[in-house]
Image 1 (tube, chains in turn orange, blue):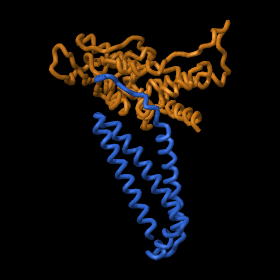
Image 2 (cartoon, rainbow over the protein chains, first blue to last red):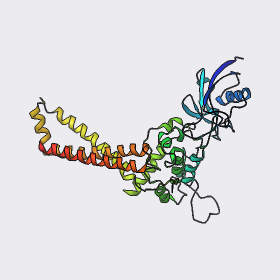
Image 3 (cartoon, rainbow over the protein chains, first blue to last red):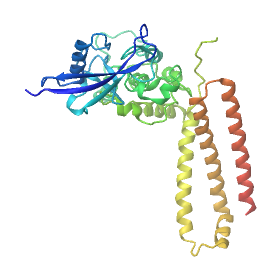
Image 4 (cartoon, rainbow over the protein chains, first blue to last red):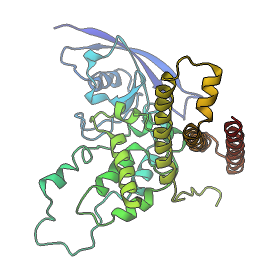
Length: 236
Length: 115
């Protein structure tokens, strides 16, 4: 059994105690069974129980342990320890207000998500069985429905940093396209109206930070492109 | 009204599409210009002058200038929208940008038709 020590620099800020944030140097002994960054963070928490971070499912489904790891957003539970260098810098997701240590206030992020009406709108009476789709129609939803709303993409997006109150952001727009693309949804035109706005949609300048950051390997930029395509199809 | 976020201007598609189309026009012009110039050997000032004064080249160059100005308008306006928050200042910068670009267009056209 090999043990190795890993050095961490962790962003710490407790608004009740600290005048300003600082980076805490802390090391942790890893066992050979520790595979993911979250394993190391649980050990860190055992060592210093004042450290605060969110975590829940520990398998990349709940999206609660999104962090900025060595400058790149990702999920602690999906990040392999073997891929990390000897010193790891952990910071909270950029651009959102800090509540404490690695915990951010996601209110703005979810406000944007709710603004795109993330639910099926269909005014027909519900049928006896399911609302059916062809396999091709269902395939269109692949790469869209898998989003876990961890906010890695939106908080990696400079347009979202500058205008988080006005720009929907990559996560919200990916979900917007998920319902625009859904053949069972009847509110396509209203959804496009809702997004046809210089701030809500057109702050995307296609720099692809969202694609780079997504821990589920989704492509919000492609979805944004498809929203624009749908608008062109509607207008031309 | 102080803290209320107001969005929903319902424009942006034409600007976005226009920026893509003008980019294609400028790329096509660059290729056409390079290809046609390559056939003008030796490229002396007189040859270049006659080449640019030609009606077809003037037509293409005029389209290029219009494309460049529209493309620059959307691009520079986007920078103001991204970074400048006070509405009054942003409006002033938009107006100054537009005035400068319209002025540049007139200037470029006058040079083009002077050839």
